[in-house]
Image (cartoon, rainbow, N blue to C red; front, side, top):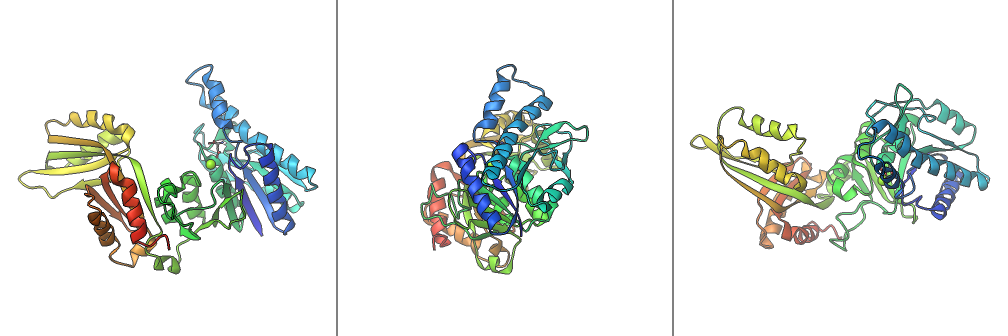
Amino acid sequence: MLVVHKYGGTSVGDLDRIENVANRVAKAREAGDNIVVVVSAMSGETNKLIGYADHFTSTPAKKEMDMLLSSGERVTAALLSIALQSKGFDAVAMSGRQAGIVTDNAHTYARIESIDPTAMNSAIEAGNIVVVAGFQGINKDGSVTTLGRGGSDLSAVALAGALGADQCEIYSDVDGIYTTDPRIEPNAKKLETISYDEMLELSSLGAKVLQNRSVELAKKLKVKLYAKSSFSDDIGTLITEESENMEEVLVAGVVLDKNQARVTLRGVSDRPGIAAEIFTKLANENINVDMIIQNMGTDGSTNLGFTVPQSEHENAKELMATFDHDIEGMDFDEHVCKVSVVGVGMKSHSGVAATAFTVLADANINIQMISTSEIKVSMVIDEKYGELAIRALHEAYELDK
Ligand code: ASP
Ligand code: MG
């Protein structure tokens, strides 16, 4: 079997931890697997390097930043390879370039365009464990590029795809994906399996475990992903294609998003083009709009509501003020949150939304906005009740069982 392992910053946070990773990789190798390891920089290292540049200017050239930041991952790759060699294993460390990773020119946020796995394949055939520095590639001019924060996950998934690996194991200090945040609900259970789409919807739960772009890529390339801990032998959570037995489980998880602010526009002119104008204005300022609700118009006007990230709340307020001819009144509330119920089972079962509304009703929580997708029901409520709602929903869908 060919397996890609990826170890995050905490897992390689100091020399003892690198040694621990070397032992784990060695064990998998001894069991007969071919292994490509992708590593992050030691925890805190990337931020430290950013701080160094900041000493000179707050606007360093992105090309130099890539030169600087890519070094963190190279240090770990070299050290892990040295550690493996010291234990008698054949290992070779590679930079992104040596691993054949070519990206576009978007320095500090590059996209992988192609991977030529020839060098990695020859090294594997020669019996080596290949250790690749994550988070980086080169562009067509040969300059080093990096893939955006958390980008080592993306490197790992992309390499697994290019190598046709049997699976990609992402190691961190968390042993998998849970039905909800265990800090909110101590009875949260670790999931054995979850679909790519559910994982993407639960991203705020998984954010610290898996980078979103990497899950999207895994879905596209059909890479079997495991979220595992480098500090335990737990099998972790498998993130994979949707299967029929996943649909038997109604709800996979419930998630709280505190970073929401609500905007309600009253008496909006009910004419073609008004929504386009409002949301283009927000888009031009790069404000990410999440939920949008519009009523049927009556007497030439309508009501329109939407949510934005809390940090954009003031910005959105200013932008909406420019529509004073078309909008009678506005109401903003930054003390809201979004609770979502996620599960592919909703596709084939009814009543999931009704249960959620009933649970909130029984807890006397008012629902301000509702939106749904094929596998998700989201509700905007008062921020004060967010955690209470999560616990009540978790219990109602028997996620603790
Ligand atoms: N070292 C990079 C970061 O801190 C990439 C990664 O760890 O995945 O964002
Ligand atoms: Mg990470």
